[in-house]
Image (cartoon, rainbow, N blue to C red):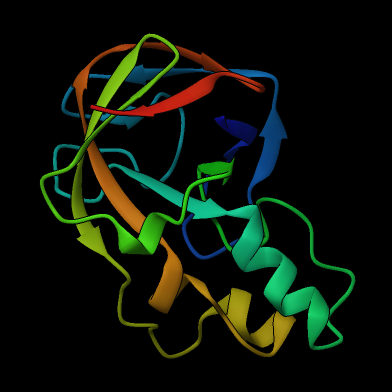
Length: 143
């Protein structure tokens, strides 16, 4: 079973996100209260714990969820193998995958802190099609 390991939020872009127990994901907006939320194609970011473990395996063992600025940390689903247009149901929320990976920008605080960033290769971005709450432990279903 694929599931949510953490929900992470920040008030500023380019910084580590802090974990919250439960978040409200608003249609055409994203995680309510998050700096990256808005009516655009990268409303919510997801990164697998499997990707974070890759960083730990190369000696960056202080990494925790949210340090790559992902909104949702997942387990059990290889996110970057999904296709754009794939729909995911997590908790009460329905997402559509809009982008796989991203270009890492200069001055990225995450890359500066960690030394490398897996988000450009293995993170995905989604938009919210049906709003609702997601909490840690919720199942992730590809629909």
